[in-house]
Amino acid sequence: MERHRDYQDLLQMQADGELSRLEAQRLDRHLACCAGCREERRELARLDELLTAASLRVRPGFRDEVIAALPNAAWESRHPASWAAGVALVLLLGGGAFALTSGAGVAAWPLAEISVAVIDLFRSSLLAGAGLLDASWRGLGLALGRLLDGSLVNLVAFGVFVLGVDALFLRLLLKTRRRVREAAAGRDADGAKPG
Image (tube, rainbow, N blue to C red):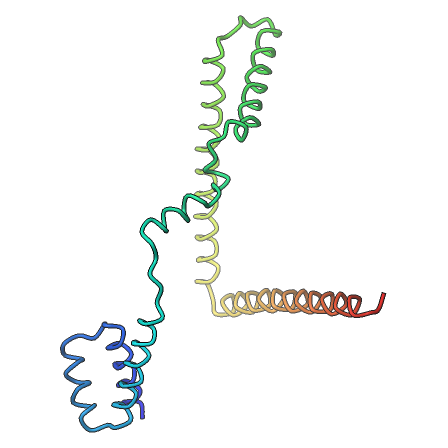
């Protein structure tokens, strides 16, 4: 029975044009002695003829027209108005930094130097954050490895803890699903009432 299903899969692969020469020979040997598979092969050929006859020819350039008619995604927008908020914020921060440095008795820095200082601040913050995150994950991994390596009791306790968290998650998920169903049923009932 399992073997027959394999030949049915080979028939489908042959209809899709994905059959190797060795598989085609194997299928031909099977078709010589199996009337059911021969009938299925004929049905697949008829289906292929029907699909070919029902297919529509698409005019040249149709794909390009569809793509051109689609609206731009938000991040692809080239319109200047979409960048207005970002540019205004940069100018506001730059002007504020300039006002703070010149009002504090510090010689007025050129805007380029202020920008370099702000960029350097962001770069340093990113590097420090990445290093802290890496060290935290390594430390957590080492601590967890040492805890679970110590004894079978710790391993079992950790497994029970993970299963408890999974059960809590599933309970919350099912409760939320029930609330959504009840709310939908309430809306359907309200909509069915004569008004």
